[in-house]
Image (cartoon, rainbow, N blue to C red; front, side):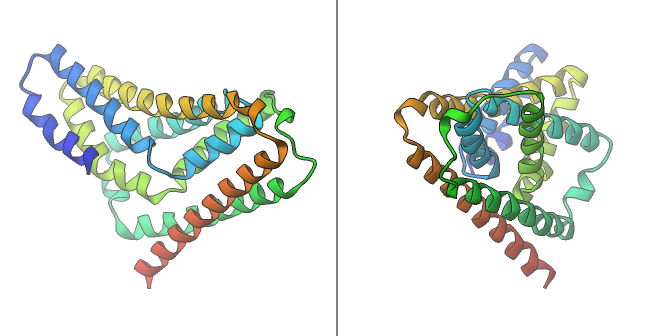
Length: 231
């Protein structure tokens, strides 16, 4: 609701000077992204489990995957993909497939948490693990049908307003949006990684199990929601 109100209020300021409009676009897109990122979802669960296993940089890497996907979507929306993602049938299919992916990731996370030899001290990043974290950011985003719904409503509205100022307007919107996501997920990753020394291996394993169960729950919800529409 807060995000929608921000977006609806924006047209009131589009008659301002271009510089002022760019500031408004940046600040409001940052605020909307920040409030959206604070809501529980697949990317948050992946950030918590990733930071617990690999440290702080897991958060920014997951957001990088999220940003790559959103950049591709912004480009696609500009070229007319909006009609496709506004389809309830498409959203339902995405929900079912994405839900299945989330259930799979959740099950693997739970199984990892049940291994007694898993420890928070095993963290660290290499090129392969970095790529996996970036990919998980993409998968976590695309598996969420509400992410498509946001872009089909608030996101496309912002794009239309931003396009009035050309490439600079779109770049300003996208930068504010991604920085809003990065601010929250980096903060979460920092809190989790810096608290490693205060968390026992047993608590760490339970953290993985809770994150895994959350992903499974979200996945089942998406599958059921998509299935109800198709039925």
